[in-house]
Each structure stands twice: as C-alpha cells, then as structure tokens.
Length: 112
Image 1 (cartoon, rainbow, N blue to C red):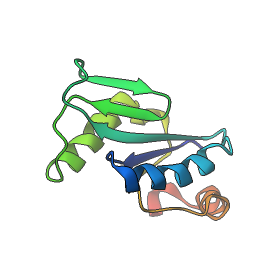
Image 2 (image 1 turned 90 degrees about the vertical axis):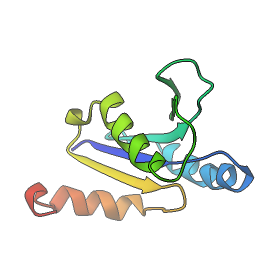
Image 3 (image 1 turned 180 degrees about the horizontal axis):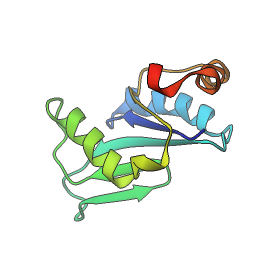
C-alpha cells in the first residue's frame, strides 16, 4: 500500500512551528508514505521546485483558490497514480499514523 500526504502549508512563525511537529512524524521514515508540504511562491522563477518534502509552486499565496490550485498542481507533480491513497490535509491537522495505517491495510479502497 502506497500513501501520499499533501499538506497545505504557508510560511509564518506559527506555521513553521507546526511544521516541526509534522517533521517528527516524517522522520519516523515510513517506507510506504510520501509527505509533501505545498507552498506558493511567485518568485521562484519556475513552475515548481521540490526541495526535500517541500513543493513550491510559482503562484501568489492566496486562500481561495490557492488551496485548490496547490492540490491540483501537487497531484500532477507527484504522479498520483503511483499511490493507493491520497490524503490532502492542512498543516494544523495531525494523524496517529499507526492507527491510520492499520485502518488502510484493512480497508476496501472502493468503500472509503
């Protein structure tokens, strides 16, 4: 089972602190999960740049339609067809990974 986490993110002091908690989850090195933080930055000079777990898109940071645009762009960049499940979430939402993985291992994909 392959799982993709797309995490809507922005840059500021509070969000950077929250990202540190996500980083603790990522550091556990789940072999079957890829995590990406999605940012907009109109100054990057390219359509997108991937740096570690961060993807920067060349767009102005906006709430609407920024979140939607980040999600659609990330699905293209990450080749969503390589994954069994995709979770698009916000930076401030956390998951208990052992329970989530247990649920997904026993789930029927067409019934989720």
